[in-house]
Image (cartoon, rainbow, N blue to C red; front, side, top):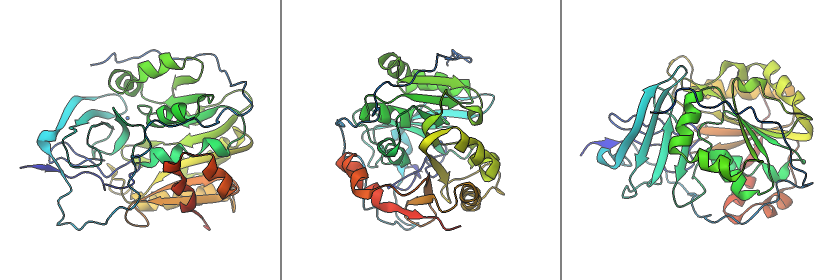
Length: 340
């Protein structure tokens, strides 16, 4: 039986080891080609603590002790258990939506995946019956409790994996998301429940089509989530300190940035864009703008598999944990300072 080689069945980043639906492997964003550009009026929550946590319905979706597998281990998904729902090329991406059968013996069983590049990196994931994803999107959901009051920006919205989880966990929070490719938003509405999410939260979720690096709101963001990849690699602008200076100016006092900086698990279309090297260059650029105030959380089976970066002083660990559901608290202990 032909098998798909999926990402490591542990913590997977937005790039989750390529899942190519031919020999099939898994790893990142028809429909109306031009969806509505929702340039809605910018609003912020009037609640002084907009990201106060609520109870999460399903909190047992992560694998906290992944086992390293050798090349001989068969951790693939049989090709007959993966269905392609849509496949086409937009102006910016090679878009595919895959449905993984609930019968698959894999952490992604029952999931729907969004692939946006030729190598097949996963850019969004959703499950029908659970909220957490077993991926770095769950780490993104730990950011709101350590932010000041104000709206959260998501740069690189994809199909809305991070926004869905954050809106559920923090009922008063407001999200402004930017996505470059309108076709990705069309796919998100059609296959990932984004239309329903927008109808449920008309005053809390705003989506914009355009360059995420030009994102701004009145009085600034309380926090920014950055998930910006193109052709299987972090965009080059993230290796430039001036980009981080610009983003820093869009933060409110006490605001923070959390970034998916990828790693060796990310496969670029251009072989010269090595994921580990690009990750380190991006961290160095951040370090120049936030000296002594960059922390890194490593995911995966190896140190350089995939990483998330966080700016600002390290928060009070105990207080941060108490503000999170139990299933997310272990992430707090995984942060380490980046020393350049």
